[in-house]
Amino acid sequence: MAAEEDTRDEQALEERPTELEELPIPASEDADVEVEREQDAPEPAELDPETRARRDAALRYVRKLGDPVLRASALPVERFDDALKREIERMGELMHDALGVGLAATQLGILHRVLVYRAFPEDELTALVNPVLEWESDEQEGALEGCLSLPGVHVEVQRAMRVRVHAQDASGEELEIEAEGLPARVIQHEIDHLNGVLILDRISREARKDAMRAMREAQETASAA
Ligand code: ZN
Image (tube, rainbow, N blue to C red):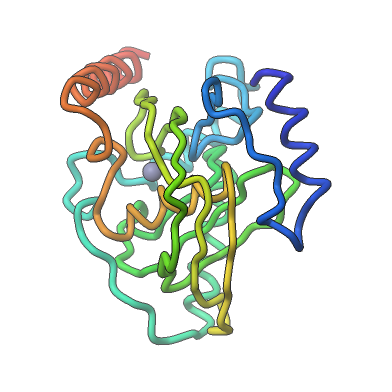
């Protein structure tokens, strides 16, 4: 990932975590942001064999386009028990191994309104249970997004720059999250998953055709390897 982005991340981190709304606003034009892949994660081909093997193993648990569960609406979580905590822990591990920055439960075939994310490698993992997008800024920006459920697809998606989300944590405690820039983008991407919405639904027909071609090619490459 470009050095320019790294600098921006550092600036962002200095301001955090208390005053999310004061984060510097990233330049939108060339923001080459890959949601669900860590900012400075190398391309899979450049990964060391161990990391790559771990990533491939994790990705086998992630449902891909064509699986109807990705189109389902997840159900609210009502029981905040140990099983939920284990589920969230597992999601965090798989996301980490898959080199993702966010993961929704539906991507693992679990119809729970649960998502995890870590927008920057230095951040702690955040889990949101029953997240509700309470407010989004009118101001939008476009950036490239990838999705663990859509291998090979990278498309520019317009999203609100800032959001406020109400959710619960793994123990059922109420959370109010304000996010801007990449974390806001990741949260919106993952809440979309909980509603059965994919990035393909947020782009033009033309861009969708290109994306589908890219995904087919990625699958052919994978099955040839
Ligand atoms: Zn996704």
